[in-house]
Length: 424
Image (cartoon, rainbow, N blue to C red; front, side, top):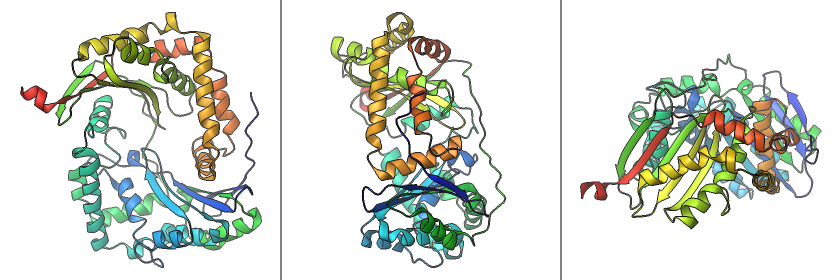
């Protein structure tokens, strides 16, 4: 076990269930406020998709004591930045601002946690439905390759599985959002006992905890019932999908089921992705880009979720390349990993992952997000050494083991092809 990364923090739990993590770093006069709600698109259901992403928008539309759009204005006028994001498994909101404005950020976060519903009107809902639909059209429907992930996950998982729909939701579901059901979704999931709050930066822990209690203590806990549980999947057959779009170059996606986030094989699959596509010396880049010049780019990555994991390889083909030939090369190369992988390959991959990880810790907002991630998934916010040690313990034999375990004969193949080419 290596022991190079230690971020000593204080963890408290309020009477209403809110978990509070305090980390003091006096290197710069700034503070990062980072709150995670344990709700994402996986907590939705078939026919009612997009709620969690909707609230990523709604939470900036004003609450009982904060007028519409003023959350942004207050933070920016204080010299800070802010944003939010939604995934399958969690929604988070974060601000980084001068440390003397910590109380401002806590007041704003507490007001929308505890007092959003009184200001949630049909007019605001209609407005944000339009915003989300336009976002979907811009980033998914009218974007080259924009529907690829939606199609891929719908094929990887059975209908109704929590990962089978896109985080943004389907347009037909977004159009049907009703105010009462939107409010019920908020009441169920956006509560202190379903959240964790990280305050990291130039702070006094005692004073910061006092401010947290001042603003969050009065918010009542809710009865929280999780609707997203581990549902490990296995494909019983190969699935091949061809989808024509207005694109110039064909793009291929190959996907297998793999291990979950922070589970025993997760880190090994990360290293495997680096070995086969992470550099010019990697297996797939060397073979497909430099030797055979069949693709413009190729990448592989482990997509780890709380209830399922996926290993995905993507390749953008050159104009005259054969997709069948490219697929054959990819499948052949990964089948030969046990014969071709070296200790040096694994060491290079581990060093790359380690350096990227350590580099990311230069920003206080990244540290805050790690603290929240570790607290949410591992129960211990200061799990930096544990996380990094997962990679250090992986050797060549482990890579061979996971490659043989997860690269099953059954996988999903998605090809995004050119409409113009098909019409000709």
